[in-house]
Image 1 (tube, rainbow, N blue to C red):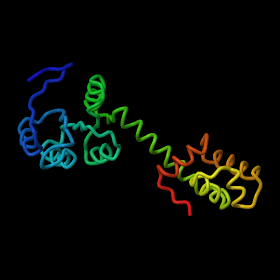
Image 2 (cartoon, one colour):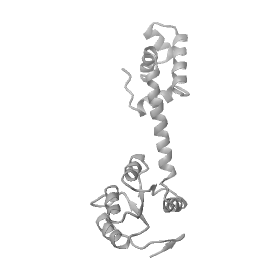
Image 3 (cartoon, rainbow, N blue to C red):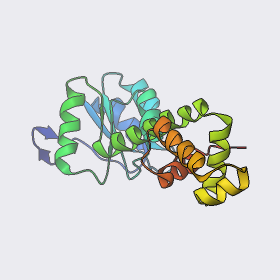
Image 4 (cartoon, helix red, strand yellow):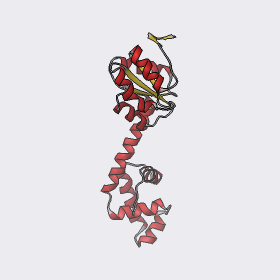
Amino acid sequence: MNNYAGYEVTAECANARDGIELVASLRPDIIILDINLPGISGIEAVPLLLKFCCTSKILGVSMHSQPAYARKMIKDGAMGYICKSSPSNELFKALEQISDGKKYICQETKEILAKQMMDEEQGKNVKILSQRELEIIRYIKKGFSSKQIAKELFVSVKTVEVHRYNILKKLNLKNAAGLVNLIITNNIDIV
């Protein structure tokens, strides 16, 4: 097989069952495992592979950048996760990290994970809003202007503007579009 940057490819296979047999006989240092395999998926294969060679380190590879796949693989014993769209130098960085016993998640997946965590945090902040602020948000979500909201709630436009300002400040948002995006992204139901 080929050698790349100090790594030697000792075997390749097209499905997890063949991979399990190869791992049991070859006992590789690192297993690069595609999660989309026929039959047993790469995700399901992680604990099976480690059962036959507990010293192997597994690097999951996928076309999916969603953190849920990375979490599942790492929870089941993989040392890393990288997207197929990641640059080749990131693959070698991942191999180096897991060779040293460190976990690795590719940059693309980390960025999505960070955004999800920030969105979740902002979603939690919705709970600190007053009833009036939640009422204002319902109207904003429907596309009402401050003037229309003021008319519906029998308050001044200035009062609505103050509430809008306070909502954005409490949720650390820049504008109403960000607020609507937060509500939709986190499936927040404001009744």
